[in-house]
Image (cartoon, rainbow, N blue to C red):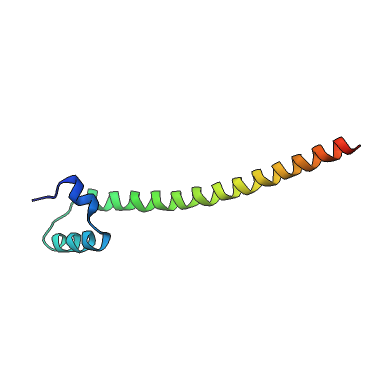
Length: 78
């Protein structure tokens, strides 16, 4: 028997992993189980790359903003 959604979302990660490991001992899986895990890992890797690129884009945008402000100040002073 499964838990309702509210109970499942309130379950701590450690307890959820413990219950998963207990059920996994007596569960047979198909090949889809492995392809889904491969896809999940690929998505996780892609997400980490996207976060790094977003940080770099933010840094570059800040540099461009500061450069523009300096350029405006120089143009006004002349």
